[in-house]
Image (cartoon, rainbow, N blue to C red; front, side, top):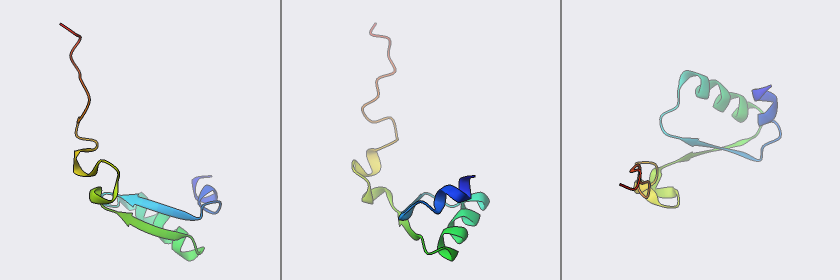
Length: 62
């Protein structure tokens, strides 16, 4: 089902290092004419600070 979903996409964005499973999905997308974009953290809104806990407060307010 996951590969069938790729057929509905205009493009696929790849973040980080591709795993074996991701590599198969990327190959499938390319074979079916779906554009694949490899994204760097600088390309994302928020840049490198995004996803490293920036803005997240784990305290319980005490």
